[in-house]
Length: 510
Image 1: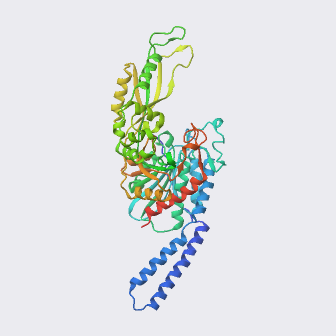
Image 2 (image 1 turned 60 degrees about the vertical axis):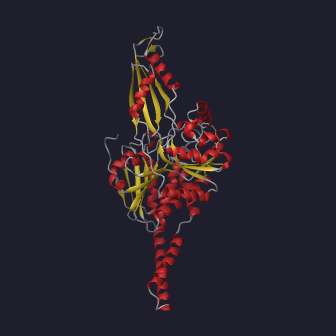
Image 3 (image 1 turned 180 degrees about the horizontal axis):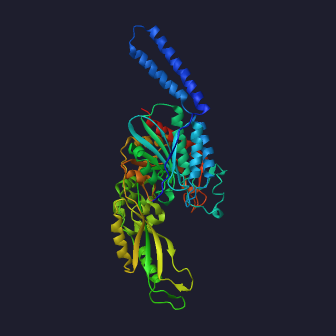
């Protein structure tokens, strides 16, 4: 956790000339409405105020439509901004998210939006802005500005170029999650431009450090701005979206929970020696033996309620020989042959029904001819939301059966599940099924983690969702988020901007 916290800075900006002109046009429309009311009164002197109120309401609705933003232009602008955003290197480590803060700050300045920013540590910038509204629980639009490293030698286009090639925008973060961040930004700015009364506050937040746990970003923000966060009831973030499945059917998942990360460090100890005289037992042999037992162990599968709904809702889209199993997944997971078939068919689905551990880092001797006194491994374990982390560590200790190996926690979050029977969930579902014929929209669990857990811990209903539709067939193995050649189509950004705005308008306007 950061020790030296830099206090946030407030930026109250003067509206741009464009917004002043918009206000002038609105004043003209107000005069037109007033004149029309007078005409109605003179032509109907015997009528009561109900007729005037009806006329006023109709004309205000018409005026609001006239003031509505150009959605096609909004989408085109989203593409331009994403290209610029992808050119900003915010690789974590070290982050340098203050570069992203400068990017958003300039946009807010141009749009006349007041905002605040703060660094959780030198260079670790966070920025937020609020559109004030009514008393309903606020909506937070959360996105992170940091990205994972990219090996440029493995990319077909430079990872920080933002190049547009064959209708796709290339760059690290295009999918995780600068693309969705721009959709949220454009929808937020559109609400500001429309100038209509909101039924709740809408809070745009771009944070640092999600890719390394979020403590210098969303975790910092939730504590530093506790009063602001306290008024929130809903949050939109990354974690869900759409993809084509068998038969060309679009399936959208709204993330309501996620597997809990438990990052562990294993340290094995033994006597050091010269490499020319190997011993029967050493820290290395003990560690390898323990790791092999973990690799070979099958953690018990189980199906959570949210996932059971997803499996049943998409069973008919599965491979023909697996349809019946998907319809009754709770029973199917008891069949070892089915579990093997599932792992080969859909590895991510297999991960969603059991605890998992991946060995990601190994540490041994600093010299090739020295048997080290200590060897270490680091594990990325992901637990189902109902799994107690301490009980899992006890289980892992028993599996390894190596008294000379210690286990320490590097990172661990608390589990939480958001309800799916809310107005916001229903709006997302309705908007997407109207846009995509025969689409399925279902709650889902992310096998990865996002910053949403910081806010679910506070009782805020948090959904991971982006209205973008990906076609897995167009991606080669190893491509995509955290992989090579990360990219998003221009169509997804333009259409996604329009859909995101539609969802927000239906939720924040009465």
